[in-house]
Length: 158
Image (tube, rainbow, N blue to C red):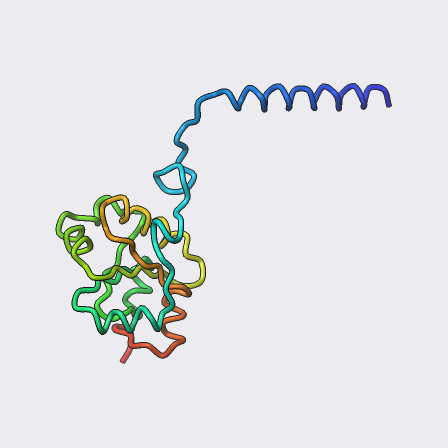
């Protein structure tokens, strides 16, 4: 029992010493969320929007850009009318000067994926914001919500 108490005290002391020392080490910009040190934030990096509101804006504003983060096969099976497919894994190559100019000049930019998980879409929106795109919108529920709402779809089987 005495050995167990001694070992527990040593482990606790080591944790406290190492934890305190770690607080004095200058922070490194670890890419735990994309390329920055901060996770994307709704309200500053992007806004959430529901599918019906996104469609209403898409059809009423003169210049809207819609970005689809899903796979090529999913995109081919059906997508929001006029959407452009973009992969976050290859975002550097896909954000050409022409596409960035279109995004910066758009009245609204909508980003959607395949469902409720919007991590990739939030990261893409944050990257767009860093590159000067006025606050993009992330579509809640993604393409599943779009289809489920009976909104128009392009592609796929007729």
